[in-house]
Length: 116
Length: 113
Image 1 (tube, rainbow over the protein chains, first blue to last red):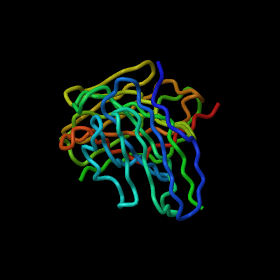
Image 2 (spheres, rainbow over the protein chains, first blue to last red; image 1 turned 135 degrees about the vertical axis):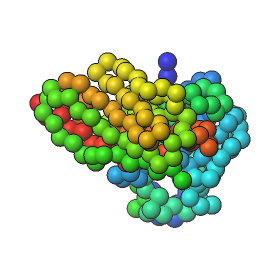
Image 3 (cartoon, chains in turn yellow, brown; image 1 turned 30 degrees about the horizontal axis):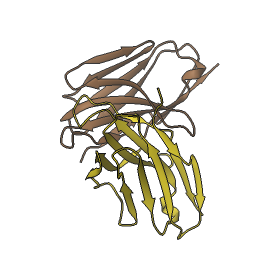
């Protein structure tokens, strides 16, 4: 079956611009996660959705970052006034059901964001 | 705050060797530990998931062990092949958050033909 998909695969933008990154989770998965991976680092948690609501947004670095999941499926990560330090690979993951210790996260291919 | 460390940062071996990748974590109150593979420019592929109550998991030539009390896990790769070349990431699901994965920086493995 289809896995997690993310669009675009690559995004190049200029400093100060607004960008949107999209994630389509595996059908039926209620939990959705965003992570950010900077060069040479492991992914770092940004935000977790359970259904339509953001259950934990403690990983968002500042108020320029915002994410939505209006219908409990597709999610969009929005970055305002982009800065060069925002350049990274943004990874999305989903899992089948509400948080639980035995719940595996399935990752998408990521969106590589480059801010010039 | 949970911290995950992976050693070595990079490893180069000839084809056919058996090898061990190491992962350590500072807070032993975890739900599970997951090993991922990441190819250049790609996303993460889950290799093995070990629940906190388990000691090891096996899949093909891969074997992962977990010593929760000492905060350590190892990924053993038998009879390595050039196709195994990738970055291997270790991640723990913290008991406190119940969903958040904390990752190490990874080990870059190169298997030479």
